[in-house]
Each structure stands twice: as C-alpha cells, then as structure tokens.
Length: 363
Image (cartoon, rainbow, N blue to C red; front, side, top):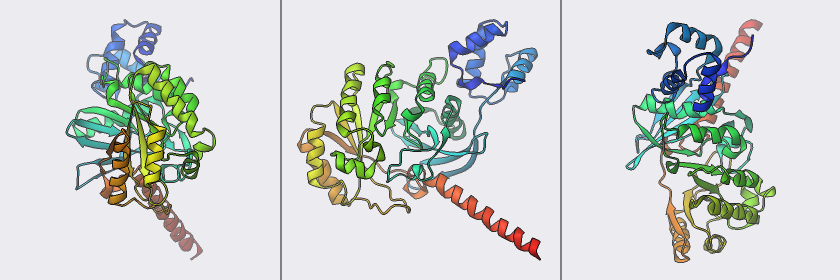
C-alpha cells in the first residue's frame, strides 16, 4: 500500500491536478483548499459540502497535518503567547503569537532544531533533527489563529531553524500562505531571517517574492562575526553584503539587518562606526536586539547606555535604526528556550522514573 498524501502541502494547482486524477470536477479542489487553508479544518468530516464517497476516498489516500498543543505560556507583561506544539512523529517545536497595534504577528519555526551553531541562540544547542514540511509551517500559523481566535496579519520566519536551509519547503510555504485561495497574507507582511547562506540568498532573489529579507549580521567585521557565528567560516561578511545588494537590485525590497548586542563583544562605538561604513550604500534598516541571555552561554546583554550610544552612532552616520521591543521575556521568549526547557524537564522526569523502576526491580 502506497503512503498517504500530505494534502495540506499541496498548493492550489497541485490540488486541482490531484482531483482531476481522481476523476472529480475541478471545483472540488477549490472547496477542499478553502476548507484546509481558509476555514482551517483538520478533519475531512468537517467538510460539509463534500459528499460521503469523496470523503472516504480522501480519507483512504490522504492525511491532514495537524499540530497538537503541548503547552501555552502567556506573558503577563505584553500578551505574548508562546506555543509548544507536538508533531506527528513526536518532535516538539515552538511558535510565538505577538500582538501589536498594527496587527497580530506569528513567529514560526522552520526546522526541528538548527545546525547553524550561532553562539547566542538556544535553538542550535542540540543541533538539527529535521526540516519542517510546508504543511507543518502552515499549521503553526493556522493553529495559533484558531487557538487565539485572532486574525494573523504578519509572519516572521525567525523561530528555530535556518529558513534557507529548508529552502524548497519554505518557499512553498511563502507562496501558499499568501495565496488568495487561503489566508491571503500579504507577502509584504512577511519577514524571513537568515544567518547568511549566500547561494540560497541569491536563489531567493530569483523567486519574485515581495517578502522582507532580514540578515542576522551581529557583527561589523569578519573577525567578530566568526567569533559569534560559525557560518562566517563558510561565507565572508563581504559575500553576504554582496548577496544583499543582489537581492535589493532584483526585488526592490529594503533589507533589514539584525544585530544582537553582546556586552564587550560587538557593542562598542568603534563597532557601530564600522557597521555604518559596511552598510553605507545599502537601502536598509538595522534592528538592534539586546541579546537574550541563555544559561548555556556566558554572553551578557549590553547596558542601556551602550545600546543608546550604538543607536545614536548609527543614526549620525545616516543609518535607519530601531531597538527591537523585547516581548515575552517572562515566558522564555528567546528562540528555543522554552522547547529546550521542556525537553530537559521531560528527560529529567524520565530519568527519575527509570531509576525508581530500577530500584523497585532490585527489591
């Protein structure tokens, strides 16, 4: 027996082709696509305008990807909600709901874990387990919209994983989440963050998408970047900047550079001046991020004075800059923290239970 089809990963054209192969009328594809990607159902029985015979056929041949919420934490400070979801294979991912005045945003993961090794990030501490499928990424948005009861208008691909390391599934996600037959979220309201995979950045520029590309730069020189980000050993900072120019020339979309300020590492006035020089001829915006400390690293957050001085130095040199508003700090808001805490606690519980069982057996 052949494996069942992940029907939620089928785009609109693929779904039409599938129904033609089934010998069904083309309008059935529009109906089912709407149920999956607009009404956000998770069971074929919920599709009330689909006949019983077709439902049975779909049940036999397809499955609908659905995420199971394991834990939901809500910030008492700003209303941020962090969701832990269980995948069908038992893996755990995290996603974040961020309420803003301009609309509700969701930060999604693109991989289970990450292999990029950035030294200030909790997501990468245990390495990469696997890529998320297109349907699993869509589900992060769909489940949060359903569970929160709030319309999602903005998406950031800044959760666990390197989006461009999961290139094909991520591009398909971007196309489907903005499809007029589904949630139809404007691509201009979507931001994809990358640590700087140069070949994939150039490939993305050819896709004619209108998303915002955000580059996790975190340094103004190759030396400092190598200290913080292992990917810098593969791609020089100059190569990343050149790929950014290429992206802007092909898409016309202003770039964002993310810069996590780490005390005594990259937060000095000299670093700010070098950064301004590096970005001087780019149409860009710099997003300064006070680093969110994780217990496995000894990096410390820059003080308020250093952050303000860094921002002022960039502005004096003509760079558009903001300081990211910190959200969800009271609920393990930084990427990967909650998932890691959950997995460690689960492991500790299993270890203690195993020891108890062993002791009982020995008695």
